[in-house]
Length: 230
Image (tube, rainbow, N blue to C red):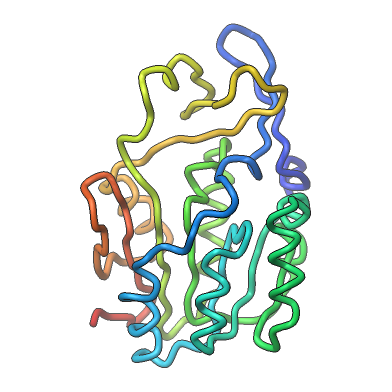
């Protein structure tokens, strides 16, 4: 296993030679409510398709885990150990552990070693916060492996066009680091919808349906195997 996977802390070098530190657990703010598409579209669809086990990858403070649990799904939340320890996430984790259908796995070792198969996965604002391109591909590789071979679903969420002129002053690798005045920075990059489709196609995920509400939003359901919409 690559050494940098052990921790969400990345030591990166800028083009100028300056070294910076990225903490990817700070890239998405805690306390954000679940996306409306979950209740409006995904939960009814998953029930129709007899989905039982859902993987919430990069679960953070479990904003999507709780609605899925409430709807009767078995949900496994995956996150860095340090991510689970952040105050908002730790509080949510303790609450979720009281639910019989909840489980959690620490990324990467526990997740990779787990032998369960899942019917669906949620990938919400994850790939865009990862500063190492080959690591993003590894995530998709492992997700494909963890999902059922006959038919499974991957809900992908992101945005495009959110990087400001000020953000672009802080280039690192193929994205940008934020909070330049802090010791620990967050990281964000963007992918066009077309490049996202191409990337997921490399791992045999097919676009089933775009569920985006706004032009800058990317909410896309992908399928594996014989998965279809509707």
